Image 1 (tube, rainbow, N blue to C red):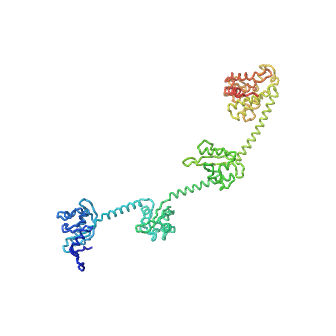
Image 2 (tube, protein in one colour):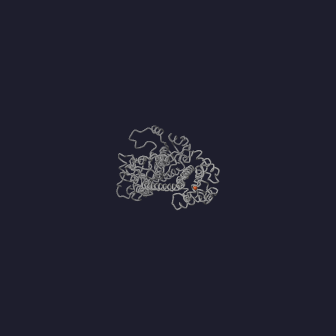
Image 3 (cartoon, rainbow, N blue to C red):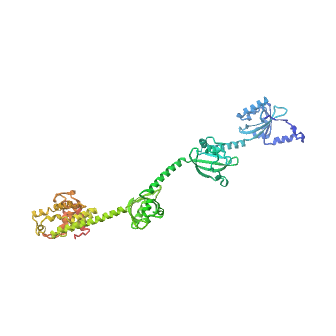
Length: 589
Ligand SMILES: [Fe+2]
């Protein structure tokens, strides 16, 4: 652009109107907010107005001094610009009238200024300039630029694709780096082409959800991209673009990994659900109060309900009144972390009121804190229970028959020796009481009692006159008596009792120190049942009448076992027996 030239006095084109006095021009120049200067050759200031003085921080007198360095007002980086303009002006090249530079003030501050220059008419070496301080504007622009860069760097660094598009033209106005990494440069392209590879707008375009009455509201949706086949969750919203127009902004979050994991989980969950539903085991989940939260199909079937009817059930409604207190006690105890059985049996009640026997395996369910309920596996054991009951019945009948047989044998033995009538029964009773006191198992006690009732069975081979002889027996007669444990054993040894009856009888005359008969066994080689039977036999025999002697009395009988405690008789058995008579007031009946 060519530089204009004007006269330092009046502009010629204003001749047609009334001339303006120079005083008015001066007043204007002196009072304007822009700096005004006239510069002569050799970069010497001829004139600066007060605004220039204020801007530069120098007095006019200082600036217009012939020794003033013109370039001290110019930022070092901008001095070359001024020098080029000077050269251009000298060589007649076009010099733009307007430029911006940085002004250095007297205090050393930098100010951005916009300079307008005209070469004065007449003496073309003199230039008139106006200087406007644009520092504030530059600062605002720089701040805006900085903030824009900040925002841009945020959007560029976000890993999720973000774009802005014009809803009318579908033109992409902005696409961040994450999106550019996928689709390449997208700016100015058409969104459906660039992002979806389509030739027309996407049928699922969400513009209708974010403009109009939904303006400003976010719209969240999911889709699978046709190009890269990945799944995205998108948040779309209308935003105001710097142009003032409302445009579409979309942030897409890649959900592919999550979707794949969800699919795997869903498949896995479906498989487990199928497994649980089709399992032969009834499965139940209940809450702290025992209300059902989940019951599988098998569970419903077991109790005769339809699956949907199980939702309103609770422990109380399916457990038989006989067992409901115990089951609820376990349930509460389990939730409180108490030591209650995790596997047990109980009687349930079906929808039609009939009983069902069940075995259950229960664990408490926790969710990072206290128990929130329980999980149970249940098995219908009604058939097993029935079989068990039948077996028990059979067993009871067999035992009864056995008992009858044993009693019949006892009566046979005692029929041959009426003087000892009731001896075996009384010995059996005392032996059983001692065993019970010693805490021996019920089953062993039953065996001991049975052996006790027939312990003298072997005496059937002893001549009846020896058994009932009213006087003292000779040695040879006594040796005949002594074979009875062996005979009893021989008779019974091949009979399959549920207990070692034959052995107990065989050993009931053995003694702790080995002085007994027939085998001379000692200590622990003698069955405990035989050791109990031995003590009971002696106590009963001594305290009863015999054909050859009157009763020696209970006191003597207890004195005998007490005296020989640990020698002939088991010490624990003796102590228990003595305690029975002294503390428990046991009486031989
Ligand atoms: Fe005996």
